[in-house]
Length: 116
Length: 113
Image 1 (cartoon, helix red, strand yellow):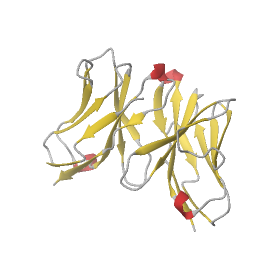
Image 2: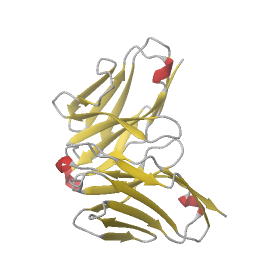
Image 3: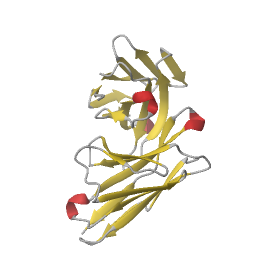
């Protein structure tokens, strides 16, 4: 079964609004969670790395004020896209690293965001 | 940082034949190399992985080989089936596991019936 769950799988929001995506690790505690963005027919681009209880580390070029990441517990990380614009429309995917599984990384199912 | 190159970008094989996807990495400190399969509209699914202390790993029709000296690793799929059609990504991780994965650009594998 799935080790990482992401919600919602699809979301449509209006320009200027904010939307939150949740990433949950199921049954096991994740030491680290990662957020990726993927455009059609392209590879995954790492946006940020987050550890429970600390601030996320953002990759170069990713606006931390626009993509707010909160990692409140060892099983939940959230990505909030603030003041969304149509160019933020994309496939957002989270992943989690599990020390229980030898630091193997598993991905969630992804969330399609469409900003209209 | 790490840089992962993946080839080919598209691979078409006849059903039943073998498929090989190759990746190279730049950081000699990288020690973990997973392969993911991604179907359209879904998140990547881990299919096999290998760590730097092993040269080869096999799981039924799927195998991965690692050459640390040359800094390249390959995915081998034998007896391909239509359901193997997907995009495959190789990845590498270094920094003692503290960093995220660096992905290759992906290979679109097409299995011709």
